[in-house]
Structure formats: structure tokens, C-alpha cells
Image (tube, rainbow, N blue to C red):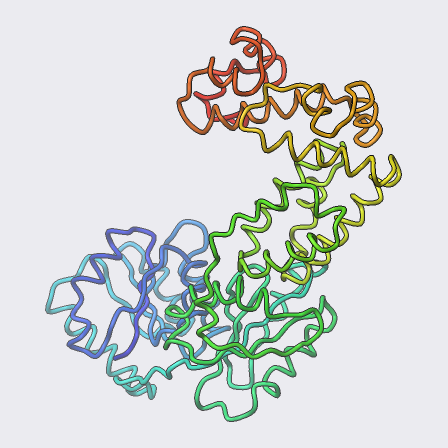
Length: 459
């Protein structure tokens, strides 16, 4: 069947055309619809139809713009104009631009439609477009992925790369494109992408991954390709090779339910063994980049609170370049080196270890109603010496740090459920509800009940 794309800005009109035209009788099947020129071109690039039915007058870019774009980019795709009686002055211009035919919207009687589609079908036959068009099965293709964030998206798109037989790059995500390799392509996949590699050498280096065992079409494969990019390829690239091979089964890699709470403790900064174990555990968790960003953003915030650094903001600025797990490993190694350097510059290793152990002990308490005496005793230190060491290691007083920890715990509890305000105040170490409300408002600008109601300070 010849594939048809229907383009009209009015949804009801599109649906009427799709449902009332005798498509199958004349060898047509509607493969898609679009409400405007940009979405129509996006569809054509993914799955080129044989014929586009388009309205001429649409908001923004018009049907004329679509006809011009198709004529330049997809000259084999025929167009039929959908017009009204009062737009015949545009019709002449459309016919001069090479449209195949036209249909008047106000004359959509069954007999007229039957004759019109028969006429259009015959014109396509004379053009050499057969009724039965065998769509090649998509079995393999190449993922082309940026290796870093120094490139700009605008650098790649104007290049308009295409393979020897006219296949175009299809976008999987903002850093990844897909080059379908059809069965008729007998060259090795490495030779087919040489031209792409040469075009891209002016930009950030790229990774090319052959994917085999694809399920039929780009539309069917896209969700799996997105997973394959964010998990299989994300962990497969080791930072060195340019060419990889991946099986479609790798798209089924699923993240584990490991919570990786070890990163919220401090021992991995001082212990090589614990750090390496956490890296390996995180690798085995198979989390995608978005989940890693969320997790380590929270980790960075904890260290910002403790050492008054700016790690969370730096992670936000670097996130675009952390495109593979090997990038995350290097970032985590650098993070540990920086934390170690900060701690060693401020205190001896034994003092830093004692204070970090005290921090871990404090964070793990179900209630934060203990003070410096209890935490110092846990480390076999006097209260005054503990407070002195705490300031030396972190650059802030124990009271300041504990106050911030209590407020953050209170915010989380307020947003997590309907636990009474008084109970939250007690769990977080505030002596009574009134004092808690006064301190909370001074810090956030909200009373606890207001904070819970609006869902946090962003609202």
C-alpha cells in the first residue's frame, strides 16, 4: 500500500479526511498525521511516505513552505493540496511548484473522493510508484553518540549528514543519532560511517556503536534505542574505543533497586577500599544518567552543607559532559581528591576521621534531639575538644551544622506525609512547636504548615 501523511492544523479536519476517504480501495494507507509543517517534516524524516496531503493555509509556516521543503529534501515524495473555493489563487502557485493534484475541501462527496483518489493513484503509477511498496525491515543500525559536551547541537545539524543511499540520521536524544543500515547495504558498517566520522572530526569526538537485532522499524525501535543509549552504551564505552558492537538484548538492561546509601556516608573519602567498592556497586546498579544526576546532586548537597563548598552547582554545570559511566567515574575520583585535599588542609587525618565518623553517627539517628555532648561522647572526646575539632575540620560550628541538618530533616518530613507538626519538631530536636515554627519561618519564609501546603519554597 502507498503510505499517506495528512497535514492540516485543524484536528477535526484531519480526522475526517483520515476516516472518510476510501484509502484502501485505491491502494493507500494513512501512516501518519501532522498539525503543522515542522511536525510534518519531522515525520517524513523518520518514515518517508509516498504522498503528503497538505492544507495550504496554516498558522506559521504554510503549505507552500512544506511543498518547498519536500521538493528540496524529499523530491520523491508527492504532494496533494487540500484547498477551499476561496483559495484558488493559491492553487495556481501550488501547481507551478509541482504538486501532484488537489482536492477541494467543500466537495468531499463519496463520488468525488472516489474519482479524485483514482486519479491520484493513476498519476502515481505513471510516476513509477507501485501500489505495493515493500518496506525494508530494519535489522541493524549505528548509534552515533557525542563523547563530551564541548560540541554544540547547532554544529552538527547543519551538516545534514546522509549515507551513500540517502538514509538520514534520526535523532534518539540531544547527544545521540541513529543511522539505519538496510539489508540492501552490503558494505561493512565501518566503511559506511567513515564519511560521518570525517565530517565530525571538527567537533567533539564521537562513539559509533553497531546495533544488531532491531525490531522492524525506527518507530518500534526508538524506545529500546533510548534505553540502549542510556544503559547499554552508557556503561559499555570505556573512554578509548571509537567503534562498539551492541546486541538489541542490551536494551533490556534494567536498573536494580540498590539505593547506594553508602555515598551519603563519609567513610569512602578516607578509605580506598570503600571507595572502590562503592564505584563497583554503582556500576552494577545500571542506573541511567538522569538517575545518577539526581543521586549525586543529593550527595553533593550533603558535602556542601558539611564543608561549605559549591559542589552541587558545579555538578549542574558539568552534567552535560557526563555522558558515559567512565565520565562519572572520573568525576567521582576528582570529587574524592578534592574532599581529601580540603580535609587534609584543615586537620590531621586522625582528627578528620573522628569528625567524619561523628557526622555519620549523627546522620543515621532516627531523631535529631541529641547535642554536642552525646556526639562527642560517642567519639570518646570532651565536648569542648570535639567542638574545637569540628570547627577545624568543617570551618563551621557544630551548632550551625546541626541546625541546618535539623531544618533539612524537618522539610523532608513535612513534605513526606501528614505527621503532626509537634511530632516533627520533637523528632528534629526542637524544644517545642512554637520555637520550631519561629526558626523554620526565619530560615524559609514559611510557617511549617504553609510549607507543607504549598509543597516547598519553589511554589
